[in-house]
Length: 453
Image (cartoon, rainbow, N blue to C red; front, side):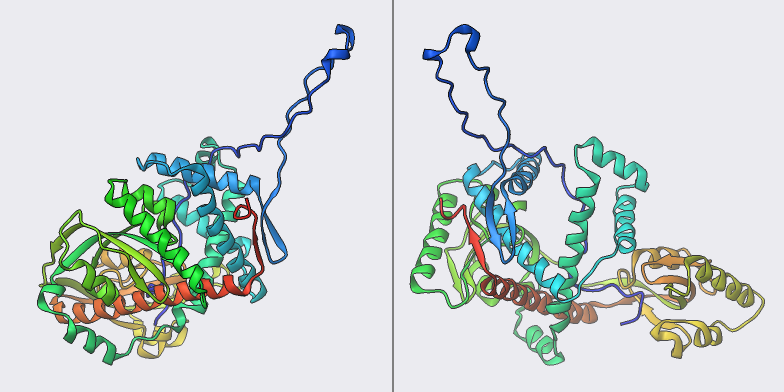
């Protein structure tokens, strides 16, 4: 993979919602015995002070009620903004604490195994988030603080999200392999109807621990059956998801979005292909738990796909401790001047580019929309064949881009293979990540004090 190609792992970051102030825990107030006191000696009421306490122990760290309240208030506000009916607070609190425990276990493992996000990397990520919201960094910080969110807390939340993303990429996604045989088998087993059908799905998952006892399995099954019962009685799917589901998107209403059959396990496909919009499956059982799917909508998918492709070259100068941003940009400006005066782009790429494509004269081959990072693609799309860009910055460094030619191509067959490969990879990745989190949790010492209440 060259240094302008996107990773196919999970999306990096989405901006956090508004966070309300943490709710204080009430305390018992000692009562003054006024029956033996004269008016002159009557005690004034004591000031109520919030008292924090531990709600969970995760290895050698704790999660406090203040932390849980902070997360609870944020999620409740997000659910309200989306119009999702709120589950009972006690249920939502237990759901959130489970997620906080799982996150804490993973963050501890990431720290132990050397995953770090330094301040410079964090600042670049925050800058990208600000740009996505069409704000500069100072405006973005002001907007957060106006909404009641401490910028220092937001920074650390983003740092943790990046760490979790890198942990998943390193220990799960990078170990997923999809063979040509799997792609061919996938395409051969899909019927024409399946290939041309997409489903908009809601999803509820009840995870079962590894090596669970029969009692634990029965308890999880009963939980899934109760969720299904509430759905059949007319409860809002998003509310039931937030109340019961262990899936990563439970607090977002359990919406999977549009998926074709290739992006779903065979168990799910068999259960939904005969359902009409609005219908719900029974409780489905797999080795990693119990599942409920609701078909929100279904549609046919157009198969012909003609896209515009660009044949391009580039020269990449990476920045590091020895090469600053200014140095990299200046070097490329000098190279561009030489190219404008007749120097051969390919020869300069071989001599100066830090990318894996250098040996091929910087040739990236035919690129389809979405193959490169946005900054690179925008600059490339603005060029005419034969033109060379000014120095362009991306997350990989600084680039000079030359467009060689363009074409329109029917990529239906290639697209089907690519989509099949991506679908298989995504399915394998999701299953492997669920197993990874479950194993991390099983190996950790966890004391959930809310469960003890």
